[in-house]
Image (cartoon, rainbow, N blue to C red):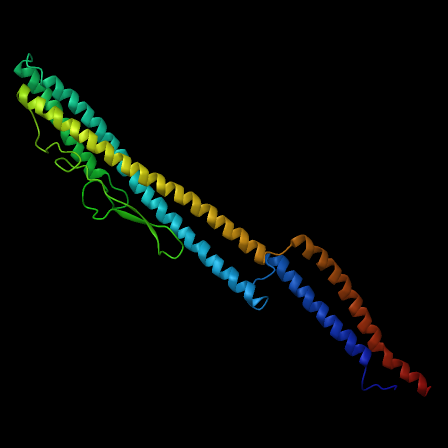
Length: 275
């Protein structure tokens, strides 16, 4: 039926053109964002999975920072402990020399002064072995330190404190230790040797703790990278494919516009009936 009120051809051409424009808009959004799924309306299920994985990645970023902080704290304690160990070795040398019964009083007194200077340096090191307000060797950090181990904070890596203060369980040399006789010096030699054995054990524990933090940080980094790769597989757009589709849709849009123009001109043929 020839009519000017209804133009089915134009309706179909317009529907197709609108769909092409919609597809073109979607492709342009994917190219602009680099994402095939950038919002829940694109694909609600996949978007929810990706968001959950993004939350885990953010959590592992915080875990990495926590591990870095803990490792730096332990490394400071290790550096201080190694310095204290070196001082104890020097102190042993002084006391052993002072234990020589043939030594005169003046020489022994000079050795004692060197010994006390080294002894006091231990206290200085212990007091300053602090990182971010945490000191693992002066006995103030009850329970040691804990670092986050997983993305939801339910697991931690714990490192115990190792007290290295004078007169403590590891360094048994008293804060007032000194010698004025060969016998007193000889007694300090045994005390220093015990302190060295205890200190080496404490350093081994701290070293093991630092290594465990380092290994776990490496694992967390790999896990975070794997999650990011998984997110990319889920939501990233194939830009090569989208580029080809963009060109196809641009041509389709031009053809659709021409088809709509042709369909709109169809009613004009009705004028021929009245000439």
